[in-house]
Amino acid sequence: MAALQLEKQRGRYAALAIAAVVIVVGIPLWWKTTETYRAWLPFSEISELDSLQLQLSVDIEVVFSRGTLTPEQQKKFPLSHVNEKEHQVDAKTGLRYKYETRYRTATIMEEDALNQPTAAEADLSLHMLSESSCGSVVVYVIPESSTLLPEDVKVYVGQRRTALLRSPPFKTSWNLKEVLSNLDVEVEQVVSTMSFGHQDIVAALSNRVRMTKVTKESMADSMRAIKSSPGYEITFSLLNPDPKSHSLHWDIEGAVQSYIQPLLNKLAPIANFSVDSQILYYAVLGVNPRFDNSVSAYTLSADSLSHVINPVEARLGSNAASSNPVLNFLLYVPDAHHSPLFIRDHSKRKVPSNAFHSPRWGGIMVYNVNEMYGPEAERPVDININMAKVMGVFLAQLRLMLGVQHTHPPTGFVLQSPGSAGLADWELDRLLWSRSVENIATASTTITSLAQLLDQIGNIVINDNIAQQVSSAVTSLQSAVAELEAGNLAFALQYSREAILASERAFFDPSLLHLLYFPDDQKFAIYIPLFLPMCVPIVLSLLKIVSEAKKRRADKQAKSD
Image 1 (cartoon, one colour):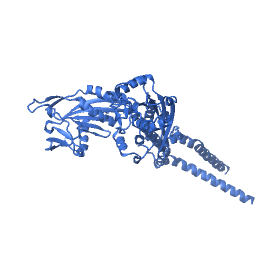
Image 2 (spheres, one colour; image 1 turned 90 degrees about the vertical axis):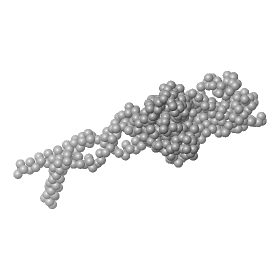
Image 3 (cartoon, one colour; image 1 turned 135 degrees about the vertical axis):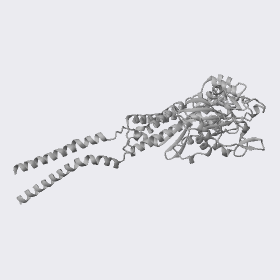
């Protein structure tokens, strides 16, 4: 009897020991070895980015030339003035524009530059004296009687960051404050032309705000321009559907160097560009042009243009080694049986450039060659393409695709052509403002979306690489916002590019998907066959021990009674 009791006692101790080992060692060890690794993320800083308040600071310098102010007024220079405007776009996005204006009189060298015979020469001379910083605006106020500008022109905007403003009529009795107040409206128009516009900035925030906040024109510009990217592939293609009739020759390398490369050099701070070209034979349009007896030519209507791209795009090929967006520019030479070929707009009028563009894709130009040879010419006819005419069209389309917005200046403004550079300095600044804000908006949206996803789904692994990319994106975003507030446009763009790259690398990291589709019911299906056979005997033994302990306690209580 004593041996039986001893055996039962040993069984109870063994069951308790096994249960203790499972609870104290087994369960913590299993929990630790099967937990999802989640590196630390700066959730508090990311939550601050969800409410984005941007300040854009512009440095403005107003320079008065000789004959615009009285000697008494000139004695009070130099001086400065700060003007701020606030716009609440939505509940989580706000904009503040800070305009810091400095007033001074022109130096002797600047007076000499303003004595040039033409405004273009004066603009170049002023640029040679000193180069304005990126994002700034310099306004030179010239006398009302100056012959530098034509009589019907009150503002001349040059290729750089300077503008010539004809002085409005001032009363001699006015003090300096009244003079500057009367001039502020003119200066504000110049700044809105050469720097950013509110609607352009709101359009750049399209990833964060509803498009109802944007005007139709700004929305159209935003939808036409290709999205911000660290690099772009530009492809020029010559389509020759009838090589038996036409032997086409185009100096695409020289044309790119003369017309396209200067523009790409100016846009180097925004993105990296690579350019290639190709010739496609027997490539035809996806629609059949209709013959118009009134003009004795074939025509393509505006409604049929949307059907042209897909069949042609299948022949273009793609660069599998690059993930950058591709901009396609196609030069189509109609075959002899469909020449001449003209494009008509929605009003049934002939398009002067004989070209059209597709938003975020590229452009197509139709180049007729039927007038270059007679019916008795020997086939194939050697034809040299006028690249100046072609590149003029492609350059205008490329500017639109890259987001160089068309400026509508007020009455009395003259904007100098950018010339061979393809882009004026102030146009580049407008693009940099938009791209910086767009990058900040996109990166902040991406990083906050990722943080919400990781917070809601605990199964997702957060490795150290993702944590590093997220921290880098947050740091770059904070730096971009700070540089934008300080008016350092070039640095703001650089940090915003780093932010968008880091945020997208983190968001699209393949390791985030490892345990994303591993729900709880699958866990139970795996762990129950493993733990149930082991846990049932242990639980039953514990229940039996508890039952026996209760029975012994009851027996002792009965004996004591």
